[in-house]
Length: 95
Image (cartoon, rainbow, N blue to C red):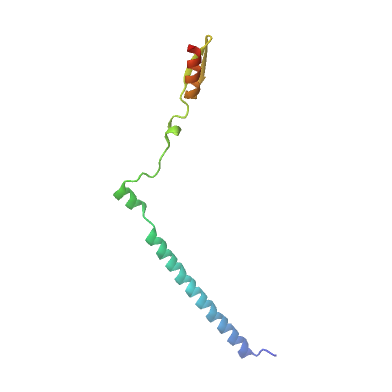
């Protein structure tokens, strides 16, 4: 079957119409998705002004990671960072 110029032009116009419809509905879906996301999101300004939520937190064990415990055994001073181990060794020395 030979394709005439009119048939080729018809296919081109049909494809252009299809592309316009696809782009239009993609834009509508993007707008709806953006609208739904905006309804669920809360701005940082609202959180800081109304609720006074801090932006970040820090755990206590990161504030002072190495507390030193000094123990003297047989005239030698040992520095430990584990409080439980230091207490156990100190109890053993007293025995």
